[in-house]
Image (cartoon, rainbow, N blue to C red; front, side):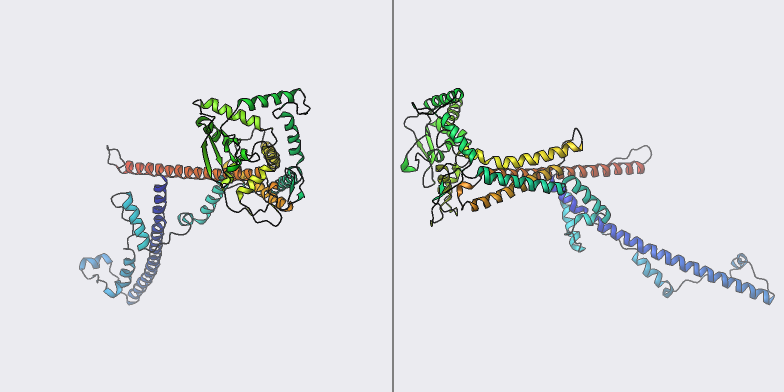
Amino acid sequence: MNEKTRREAARALLAQPFQLQFVCGSLRTLEGQVATLESESARQVSDLSRLDAQITQLYVQAGWSRLDPSELAATGTVGHSKPSSQGTRPVRQRSTQLQRKVALPDVGEDWNAYVRNTERYFSDHEIEVTGDPLGQLVPPELAVEVRRRFDSQFSPAPWDRWDYSVVALAVLVGALTDYLLVATPGGSFKGKLQPGSPLTEWMKEQSKKLAPMRGRDGVERNAFQKWIAELTTAAEDWAKVPFDVVNPKVGLTPNVHRLASPGHDPLLGLVVGLGDVVSGTCTFIDKSGAWQVIDHPNHAGTRNPIGALVKVVVHGFSDVFTAKGLPPPFLAPFQLMGAKSGFTLREGGDPVSVRDVVRYMYANGYDLRHFMTTTISPAIAEVILWAYHGVRACAVGPAPEEPRIAERLKREQMLALTHGLLASTNILKTALYGWNPMAINLAQFGALATRMLSLVKLASEKDRQVQQALHDGWEALLGEAQEKALHAQDGAAPAGRPGRLP
């Protein structure tokens, strides 16, 4: 049974309680009338018995002998008079109340006709069906039980004080980590020095020892660092790609050309960069925010997509340890947005566009290394929450079962709330840093978006389970109805002929 048929069947089913209520009301009226008739009959029997006793006493006092009723009947002296119409009027008035038929929707020729007739039945009898269908179909106590079972199976599990405490702990630790450890990539903003992340600074210092070597650079390296530097040098010499172009006239300056060309994106590059290498083109976003694709004269393209993908990856490996590094994932598409961001990049300046903000961020050190630093804040919060859920699951038993949808919904709600609060604290941190866009935690907002999508996906899964439960319930009801109909026809079938469903 599909969703449309289930909705129509549920609406048609709403007509049944009103018909049953009508039948119950008629039966109660009949019971009241029968009780009245029984009471009146008993009174009349009592009066007749008393009158008969008085007649017998009069016969005795007069010295007469009372004839037997059978003898009177034989002589024809006893007759019965027909009741008058005035005397039978109350009885006829009561009987008319019992002649009313229960109005039923016309079945019609097919299901669609029956559905239309049911809607007409609602209109003709002024039946209100816009309220709670469950309350109209079943008694109140059963409706409460059905809702309780539904909530226990499909609604998110209730939170307790430990859940709220762990969320608060995760937000506190994550916020402190974001403010103290992640901070900003460093440098200055509007003439003021900004506190830099010690972890980002350490990674950039180590990158100097791993970047491609150019002659005697005076950098001291151990054996492992020297080996990595030799690999990046060889990768830079071998992996020449058409999207690695510097052209300041169109916005491909040395500082931002890797951000402007999506082929350098750690994730988008696997698609855009692959297409550029295969076709021998350079795809980039120019300084006006327009998507551009130009041919590279020194690259003719290739028909080997596997080799092209390897070249894209190797080229990214040669760039990741350089001074500018690679841009954070999915930062490049924000250059397409020309809307005002609300940020000002110089004292007393006007708000600049989103495109200018992301270019400023990358040009001043917000690269893949700092992005990796920003992941620490949401990662710590996730570790705290998952450890908490693991401990609670182990407390249930040594081999806990697969969590129900209610528990999974609760878990996702806790994660989404945690990341939402951490995103709010990051906005507060950005304000404390003088609205420096370098203080934005891109990883935190990415984690929030991921958790929101996961919550939507889980809600959709819950809806599918609810629909499946409704389908199974309808199938069970139909099967039970057919079985009862079959048994009823078997009992009513003539001897020697089996009953059969039409």
